[in-house]
Each structure stands twice: as C-alpha cells, then as structure tokens.
Image (cartoon, rainbow, N blue to C red; front, side, top):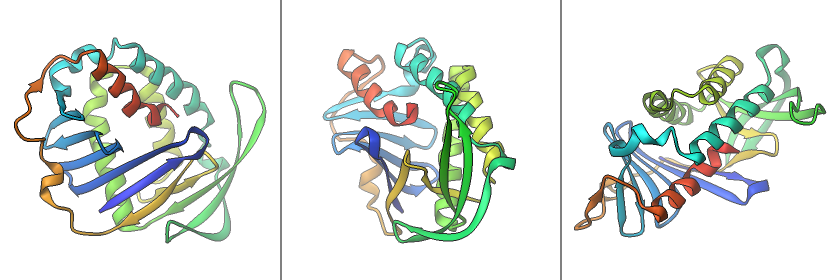
Length: 218
C-alpha cells in the first residue's frame, strides 16, 4: 500500500510505501528517503547511502534530535486526553476514506489559549495495519534516544487514541491526502546498486536527516 500525508502550514508532504512489515520506504522527496529493510534502516540521499544503525548511538546527541524531542515533549501536552475526545456523530471522507469526526478543546501550553480540534478517525484495516507497523519501527528505534520528549508523545497518543484506529485528519495540522492498495515492485525497497554504504554521516547527510525528521517535529 502507499499513503501520503500533508502538513499544510509547513508545506510538507510525507509518503510511506509499505510492502510488508520488514520492507518500508518513507519519502520526503524522490531522491531523499528512508528504507527499512528487516531490522536495518538506511538513509538514501541521491547517490549517498548511510547506514543509520551504524551511528545510532550518536544520534541522541545531535541538535536536531534534541530539537525534535523538545518539540514532541511540548506538543504532547496538547494531545487531547480520552475524556476530552467527543464523538460528534458526523462522518467525513478524507482521501476517499470515511472516518468518524471527533471534537476536542485543548490548551496550547505555549500560549495558554484554548484551541478547537476536529479529529477524523478511521478503523480502515489497512491504515490501522500501517500505523501499527510504523509504531513498531518507532518503538524499536526510540530505545536509542532514551529521551523523555519521545516517550511523552508516544504515551499521550496511545492514551488518547484507541489502538484499532488511524488518524485521517488532525485539525489543520496534518491529514491524509492519498491512499491506495496496489502492488509495489520489490525494487523500490532495495538499496541503489553499486553505491558504497557509509557508516558515518557527513555534513550533507546530517542536513538530509534533518529534512527527513522535520515532519515528526511538527
């Protein structure tokens, strides 16, 4: 399957191609993507291939990772707790998929202001499968960071939203723009041929990593 999300206020799109739980491709731009192959993760930036696992112990000390963790820690406080998530009884179609509309009032912990959120949730089995696969990857690799911000966001999302739903739209922050179930060529989940695999990232690789990580910080 293939799914694309958009963050309208940031002008970002993020596409996930899912062959199975051990073959996933996550793309920001055609030449910039992550490949999950079994338990390995590779960052591909044009002709450059970097083995993320080779330097994973250093990742938690990067400024971009600390920045993302800080953002996640702050924004986890805005995720509506379960008792603030109210079903409206309305149905909304997002990217051709029907979902139930929920309403929540949250407090922006940075401004102190109240904000309304309309959240569209679906029990579409394929989207739930995709969500769970991505969560599994996140859980395996989050252990590297040992960072409170990531843990806070994970806990807030898991507590607020049942495990058998996927988010189609989260207010104006992000929404699914396209989803399709289709055969994907296995070649999409193979490393570019005849290119060396780097175990230490250069400056351009760090910049690429920051671009890949940016949607998660928002």
